[in-house]
Length: 209
Length: 209
DNA sequence: TTCCCTACCTAACACCTGTTAGCTTGACAG
DNA sequence: CTGTCAAGCTAACAGGTGTTAGGTAGGGAA
Image (cartoon, rainbow over all chains, first blue to last red; front, side, top):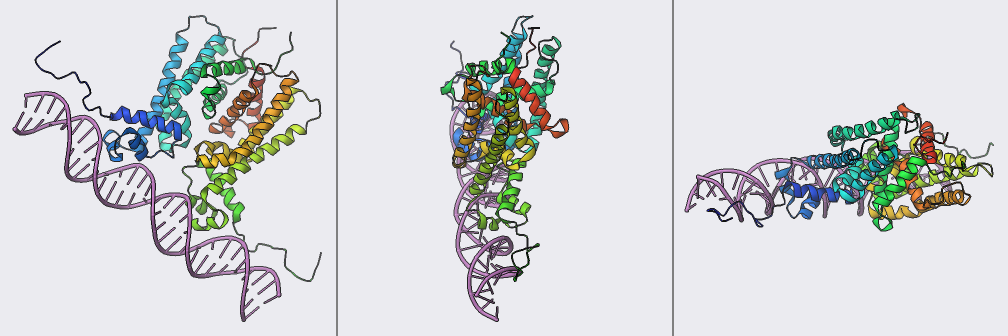
């Protein structure tokens, strides 16, 4: 425990905000206010530093935004992959889909400012920023397409639905919740169950009793 | 037909852009580029006038945006109401819902720059502007809630789904298509059929054969 | 002709934006 | 004590923003 030099162990050295601190603050602001109304000075203020200092960590505003967009997708991608692969082999299609839907929705509504910021601002951001985020985005989309294709080939999904279109509908619908979700009216967990109910079985009462 | 004075009939007097011309151009730009990247100078340029001249027709930029948002909802509201009330009495729930869904989606994707602009920029606009648009929006939401409630009371919809939540899910899902819809990959008409299929009956293959 | 009114233009304003260059601070290593 | 280096500060820049005051062209009415 005791050694010659003091060093190494830092109690509260000066607590610099740092690159990650800036990113965290920026992600929260982008989620709350959208892209257009968040300036570098707002980010700096909220982080407790001055606007110019941001350029010590980032080369441009776009660089911040791209970083946030990428992390946002990586978070939800990783969580979704883990949730699905944690299920025992031979799990039925309904359970798998419920897990995937629930994970995506919780990442969006409960867990990550980065993921919600991504969904919120992707459509507001310059084309070059969108392009930079595309590869990451494509990877997540491919994960969903693979999952859905597997289930369809297994005969669990209706055979006539186009996978790409189904994925766009599904993720689009889930992402849209960000505009109106209110935790006081029910948890993300409960909402995800409702979504799964509707998407899996529809809303029509069936008369095959 | 013929009268003393020439007057009244104008062939092509000077063709002023006018208030409506500005609105039309602005709605298109907002739909294409979002709220943040459309300045008054861009609107003026596209309309063929100078920025200052816009203030002859509008008191502020917000006034333009509010006007566009309101018209956007009114258009789709009117069309949806007409489409549903044009159906003969006693039409089955599935047909009614397909009509409503199809009308909303076509207004969004085919018909109106105002409606698509509304969906695109509502989340990017200052709070005061959103508030100004709320009454119009509420009226359209009420129309949907009334429709869905009627069908649910009739026993056509599953009884355990909350109407408000169902409406948010449905319209949210439809509006999300604006982010990815590509007319080269299929018409809005066809897309609306797919949406109705999924929402009405779900995506799971049923084994009650 | 004279007047009016609509629809526009010109030129400027105060403010905010992203970005840059150069300086300061504080912790640690030798 | 000295030097180094990460982290942040100050002050300014060029350009874009919404907005305003005052001027102007041109058609219709009297």
